[in-house]
Image (cartoon, rainbow, N blue to C red; front, side, top):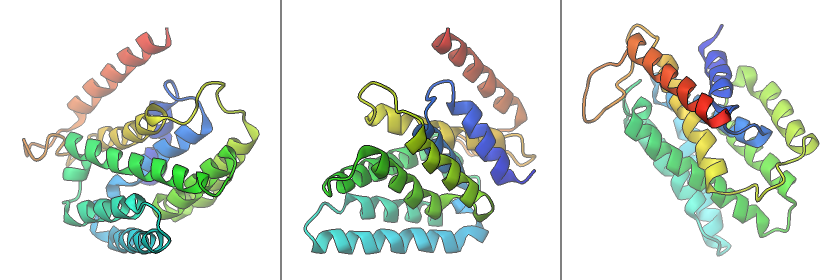
Amino acid sequence: MASYKKHAIFALIFTLPFFPNVFSLALAIIGSSLPDFDHELKKKNISILFFTGLALTLITYIIGLPYTLGIMLMNMALIFYLSKHRGFTHSLLGIFILSIFLTIVVISSYFFLTVWGLEQQLILALIVLFLGILSINKHILIPFLILSISGIFLIPLPPYDFFNLYIVFGPIFLGFLSHSILDMFNPKGVQFLRPFLPTNFKKPIGIILIGIWVLITFFYVF
């Protein structure tokens, strides 16, 4: 099975017990797809991410709206460009920073689209469409978009105040984290504590982290 499929499936497993709704699961898959933008083969994706951010910054500036969305996309592109493969973007610090940036992108997009009076389900679908096109591997992009967008419209949203910081940051962070943990099972491992410690964390640490996730999940669910 191709690595991008494994990462998507593992992100779903990692996130589902905590965020059992379609939008959050879509964010988790998007988060799990982004860390590999630090790969040499992904330079084109980084350019697309940067120039999309630049275009959005200019457009929002011209029409007098906050341009946070574009700035965050450019910041993310810069981090991916400077990062060594399975280095900073796979580290705990990198995961946290990128999760914050992507959370700001999602929240900025949400309130940007709210200005135009769109309904919540349509806004969530447009966010998934936008981020999915930017980040998801082309081989699974179409089924991802079909399942995610149809699920947003067909499956009722939770009956509480749905859109908040927790519901956005949580699945994004878990998606990024699941990617790094799965990569620990690669023979080269992951520099999980970079830049503080250059050691490559491998399978034993991955097993320990999965064990911690199992314990947290058990106490959260039961």
